Image 1 (tube, rainbow, N blue to C red):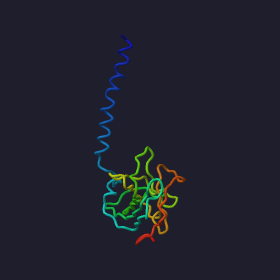
Image 2 (image 1 turned 90 degrees about the vertical axis):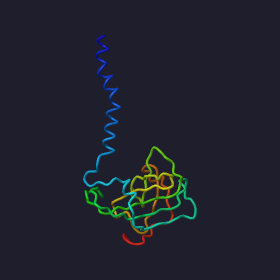
Image 3 (image 1 turned 60 degrees about the vertical axis):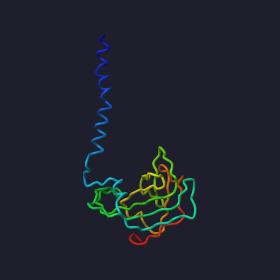
Image 4 (image 1 turned 180 degrees about the horizontal axis):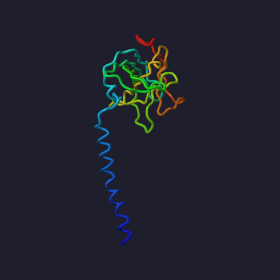
Length: 172
């Protein structure tokens, strides 16, 4: 009898755990952004200025890459973020989209690179034909840059798009 009484608080806590976790997740999902943060999913939807775009003549590599698009996105209001280890208020973002696929859904995130630098972790579109990453670091966007995609931060396993960045204006 004594043993059952000791286990009762533990059983109640375990039974209430899903409710507590669910409430926390609901609060996180519905919290308004702080520090002027704009969620990446919102930046992906904003209109952008096309800086570079290419389409390959055929699918490239096992990921079947068919091209990329680089856009500059004006942010209003500006967002507080880190660039090269320093806190800055950014009024622009750069959106890099890789096309191809359909891209597999994997345990490791899709990572978009320019040259040997990570642009960001990708977000797939609904049809798995595009993966988009957002950066606030304009130094990554430059003429001659090589766009590539990997799953996880696998530098050696990246699939590269042969056509290098050729910017139409801006960060040349």
